[in-house]
Length: 251
Image (tube, rainbow, N blue to C red; front, side):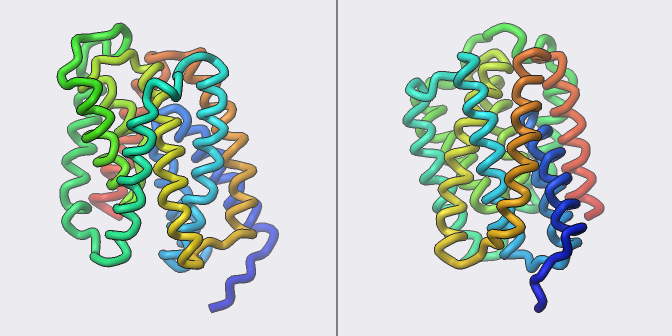
């Protein structure tokens, strides 16, 4: 297969990555844009997944730096979760190369629907801290690696799962939870990316161009989160859930 790309296609993919980075920084789910775009550009599926991790990692890095500088998240407080999520994503990436993800793909639409409904109807979601349902230790050592595994195995919406899981299970404010989600998503992206690189499944020319767009989008999206708070995050999460459901049901 000819894997040379015209300037127009690369610019188009860069623009898509910028929009995806903006959405990712606010709620997650940017892969719903970048993955189909790369497939439409006739990039093979495995190369699409590997290249997507490269550009997504840059967006997560830009968003994480902004969140840390703004004091939204302190990485040392979630260092166990960062390591656990990394390990989970590595295991997921290895697993997806050994078995078809049919089972998880059947479960995911129901999980996404539940998150969308919860976000839409939960009163004052994440506006103030609530009583935690599980301990911090269980969140960091059990939930974080499970979401990391999902990221390595399937991917789209990982940041949203990290954020809403932190709100629902730990009672965190949604801005704080979103900041932590960016750092954790960076960890899972890096863990998965390492194994795609080792397997030679990254298109560097395309990925580096998309990194530029992803970084720009993530920069502006993360600043919007800090300024807009839960009033901005909630509707975006609901819209992303709707888009993901549409993709899984009709795509």
